[in-house]
Image (cartoon, rainbow, N blue to C red):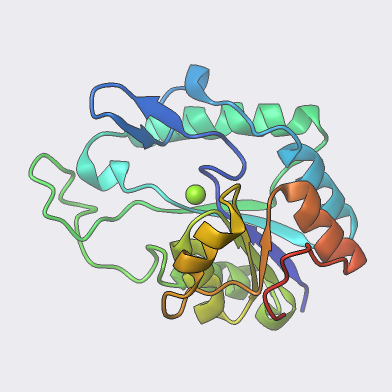
Length: 207
Ligand SMILES: [Mg+2]
């Protein structure tokens, strides 16, 4: 049994994209929209070198909503992979949830359904753990959203919320049931010091 670093994609490995049509932040849909967050590749390289299996776990409900195709998703992942490699980083596996519970009027019926893999459900993590022989209790889930933390907790991993929110503001979110992370970090560099050197960020949340 091996330990893993499970990691969210949007907002953690790559920047979100501002969608002018809908006025909100969304996932990149085209390769030219992919912008790796600096340091993300170096982070993956360092945890892999330390023996962690790296598994990206991402909700991609655009597939269910009909706003994203499998081909587009593939091209985005190819570009992200290329950018991570510039810093020597890579993932061992990438698992995505294509579903949305609906209603999605113009969606892809194949993917509009309740499922067990859409975070905060832990399905992506648990399935990958089975496939790769991962010890979930020795593993970490890293994300910038409460759904990431909830999924990690339900899978039995230690959890780190990566956020640039002020601590006082973050704390309000953290108090929500079932989504309190073990640690809060401002950057993947801080997460790296936590996982590899046992140095908790200043604002430690239990552990
Ligand atoms: Mg995210």
